Image (tube, rainbow, N blue to C red; front, side, top):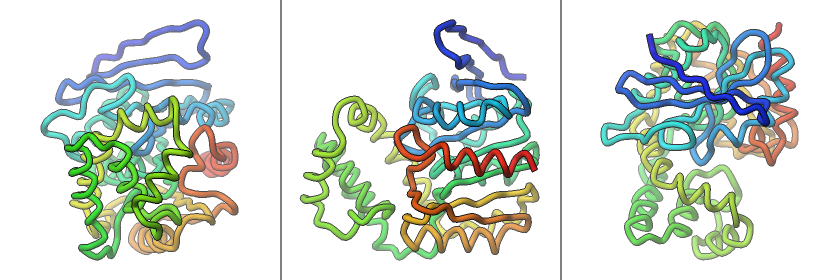
Length: 286
């Protein structure tokens, strides 16, 4: 059984805990609320702090545990042997510590959730918001990975971020020249938010190499028997909606919903987490 360490801060409505994953890496998580335990697994350029408002909206019905995935926040480093399997071990450690039967995954956290659910049958209900699953991509769709890596070697962190934003394809910036995207992002994202992103760029690169490696392995998810809600935002690109349809056809016990006026980042603090939380609450309580 993993060792859990609780950290109390009386000025913060969240409690902070840490648990050891299978390889000894410390995994931290923030908890709030009362009721059945629900784990929240965040996306790539985020930490548990980016989902506090989302968690607070759910806290009247659930005990919400927001993980810091390895490589950020309260958790230890990704490690030299990083892979999606390590992420699954981390989820298992938090699940065992909290006894959670419910899980919500966003973006890359959604991919982690699906990979974990292939072997971990503890979760009876899962909800995913635009999971980071890649289906039917062309080889050239991944050219941005090498651009990103080269920019990181040159310490051109703004260039690396621009390569990611254009390549990931979740915004109209994909169709714009890289120099212009770099300029726009510099104007739009500054201060603390940029400092966080810059810190997470190395982890983000490793994570998206895993997304590429798992390209079109979605058929592996046929073994998942848990009830699953697949959510997308209306403003997200067609490739996201196509991916949702593919997962819906692949996994047996699914429901799908498209939320009007929302985009890929809607579950995070500065976007539309209240609207996403409302759907999540309704699904898990039914």
